[in-house]
Image 1: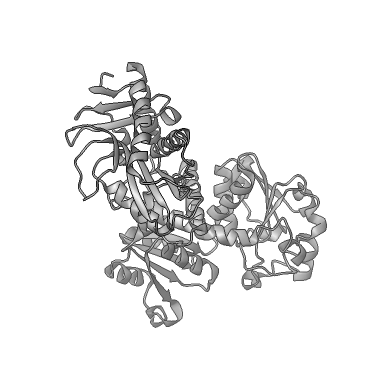
Image 2: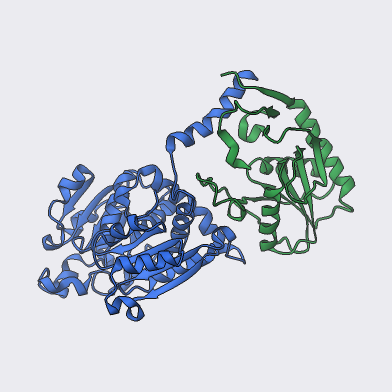
Length: 191
Length: 329
């Protein structure tokens, strides 16, 4: 199979980018204290959140606890999704009330995933402030949502797909751009 | 699959998918807000033509925790007492645009009759002596949660198997998941022909002590006194003597044997209080799991085409992208 795809970020670029994002977070979030937490959106936001947590700890600030969020039950398109996705773990082992939350996902696209995630987080408590941190912002927002920290901004066509691969899930660190028409059906339902 | 009529009609992959979805549903119970908006705007009609407290309230709570609206049709006050037929009642509810009909009926096959006539998803909540699929699923989930598997387990179902829809759903589900099932009870309460239906996957025993040796799970059926008019038993006392589960008998099973009972219990008849309230008893856990399983069922069947699962498609989905890309990389 010869599918039209382009490597946007290599292994090294992904790793450097994540380190850079940690530094940007330190500049963006005023006075990071023990009162902050990181929440990764299933699935690839989760390893990303864990890596960011480690980098932040390496930079000498208190290491934030990391939680995971599956937004399936908060999606707005379940009536249209024929194959209901496998629901992953939601594990928020801390009280979010009064905390500064770094909400982490791999790709920011329509913003609908983030809308779902915000609604779900609010059901866990009342965070003091939520920052949105993404590895790739690919544009085409359908809701008034923006990233506070975006590793890379990529201009894409609406029918292209951005695929982030992370070692923990995919066995490699890389970002691919898949062009329209000939892609395999795969992860359409994922976002 | 539009409707959940019985486990006989389901594949192993479908059953496993529902059980897999039950876990995150149960995880919701530990949140302070136990409700998610996934079925917001959907209506679940609870149509119970037979008395039931726990199944009805379990479905009602399951629907509410998914943010669906519920509509209780109590038969005593409904038009059914005025002679309206089951199909007319179902079509009336359909005209009210309900999305789910959860149906309990004393006639076997009642949900099968309704299902093709309505667009709403029909969920069988127990029909006659036929099936009680969500009970079967919650029993399997309870086993899976404690034992991490069902495949290869030795499971004893004891009691009035003849009249038990719980037993039938258990038999279909457990054998599909690869369990070794023994049904046990007085000969008058074991359905003739059970061997023809299930073959080697199911053993029959008339001796509880023998059946219990080496058992991983024992599912004690309720002795349905209301169905005992046909002189199936000499006396309740004799039944308890021979088939009642007590502490001494439980010792014959594996030390970590689980005790299940679908409720409501006749304490001192099919199960002693000591066992029912003992450390092996899963009876209250089953009640909790029942809500989670019913949430998983409502969620999975709410898709535009009902419960959609194409195992080959899912496998393709998982395998398609990554290897193709790895070849290039």
